[in-house]
Image (cartoon, rainbow, N blue to C red; front, side, top):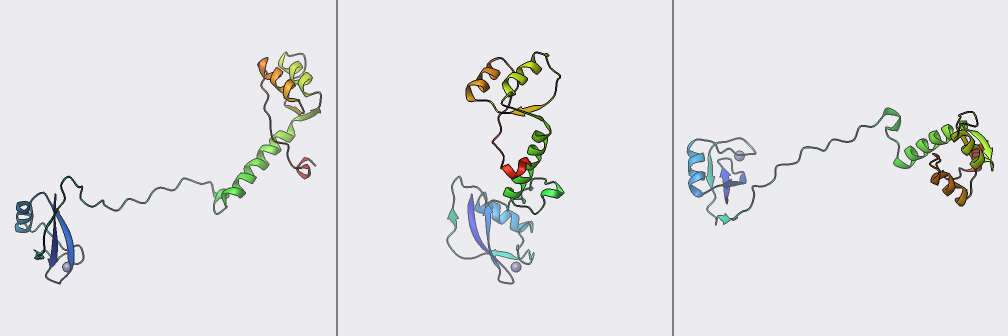
Length: 153
Ligand SMILES: [Zn+2]
């Protein structure tokens, strides 16, 4: 690629990229050269040294604006922290619908899993060891961070 400094008849200066100086002459002859500022086809090389850019690419076109991720209306205008809080609060609502079986959780979870008890969502506490044992038995349990006390009332 070769770069020429160009100027239109109104004096606008700009750069033109060409495969060769012959390409410049050919494009000029066919009036393919236009001033980007005013659209004039009367374009001439500015008598300055042409810069040779071997292997370089023409200047990148301005990127199309990136699509912003779709947001639901309720998330519109809220900061990420507020959205996280909202989602957490929702998760908590679901969680709190589950029957609180407290420290009996491992036993109850096992009973439900082995269909010795009515199937229902439960919540409660389990020690690390109890949790691991449930997981080892293939019982679907999930741990959640303990929510703030005011959320529990
Ligand atoms: Zn111009």
